[in-house]
Amino acid sequence: MKHEALLSCSGLQAGYGGSQVLFGLDFEIQPGEVIGLLGRNGMGKSTTIKSIVGLLAPSRGDIRFLGKPIGGQRPDAIARMGVAIVPEGRHCFPNLTVREHLVAFADNRNDLRDGWTLERIYALFPRLKERADNLGNQLSGGEQQMLAIGRALSTNPRLLILDEATEGLAPVIRDEIWRCLALLKEQGQTTLVVDKYVDRLVQLADRHLIVERGRIVWSGSSAELAADRSLWHRYMGV
Ligand SMILES: Nc1ncnc2c1ncn2[C@@H]1O[C@H](COP(=O)(O)OP(=O)(O)OP(=O)(O)O)[C@@H](O)[C@H]1O
Image (cartoon, rainbow, N blue to C red):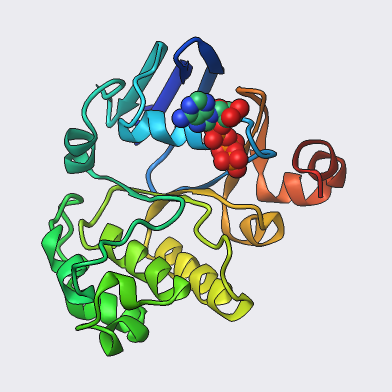
């Protein structure tokens, strides 16, 4: 029997006004997988993510989450089905405390018996517990990133999406984020990650999709990507 994909995109096309960015993406994400979405700047990674989370309506094609069509639905409806995004630029609320960020959206969207609680999020990022009463605008960039991840986890998402989660962070904080993602993977969290640190992503993810000018030009396992440096050079410029 074929497994039902958690997310499937077929023939996904999207763009902004008259300018088309995605030209028919086909891919699936199975429950428990960690997938890297790779490609140079401007190739369509964020546009793909925006289409999945409902910030951009596809012009053609189909996006399904647990078999149900979600393309063009409102972001809050898609979020309630269990899709959480850690957006590029973090987007913490300047006037909410750390604790308020972590309880305001708390939910159990993955029907877990042993889901994320405030205490478990604090255990994952002790720094957030120390800063519990600080406002969003009083946090360092690294703390904001941890908070953005903690806020996404507080909804117990079925699919966690991270867009450039380690961008602009000090190396020690970046390492902490990668360690956290590895821990989430061990716990079975399905995750889609866009990140420029291909070497770290190869260590973390099961499979990768490479996007070039709005098309998936390569997909394969981490072992396959690690073994073929010409792909890194050709499609990621590294
Ligand atoms: N709001 C927008 N309006 C018009 N064009 C946009 C908008 N957002 C992105 N684009 C264009 O769409 C194309 C794909 O952008 P996208 O953000 O998806 O790329 P990306 O692969 O995520 O790269 P990056 O790492 O630079 O974010 C680019 O040419 C970009 O200029």
